[in-house]
Length: 228
Image (cartoon, rainbow, N blue to C red; front, side, top):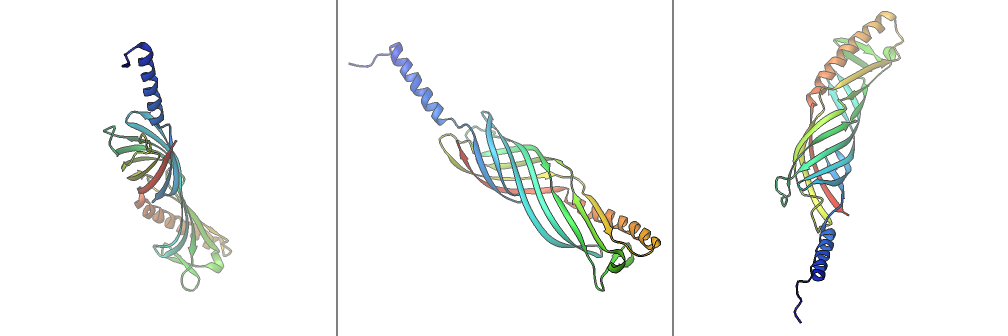
């Protein structure tokens, strides 16, 4: 006997369709990321049909040496960011996205001055011996709230697909650098120590101006995600 479109049959079909839709719907996803912001992760949640939210953290430790002016520095860099991003897909079935958001920029570089030949530092045209002035230490930081803009590929919340791959290309604005340099252990005369403080202040401003060339930090990042 042929199945007729009775209320019971229609209800059964509706329930079956709802079950299939629920199975296809993705609730959230976790991503593992690697790129110029270091290693990190994001939680991805749906917000609208073509809009996802991403919330995550990234960390990158980078130690290096740099010569600035007449002074060599050992830099202990820790790039830490916590971001809130929004991915907008112009087409619901497209992998291309536009991304905007804001980051908490905890990036910091601890700097240690390395004396030159003969164990001397040169600041603002004046030379100082480490036996007289001790050591030079400082730090370089940037603005905490940094806006982000970029593009990307991949959707961690693709229906009926648990594993996905993605990529980001963008940049965040971290503004001018803030530099603090402090000489420790000046044991010579008050006059020399006073002049040293003035010369280090000049070196601090020069280093700050140089570090401010990195107002914009590029973001190149690849990710793999799992939805649940």
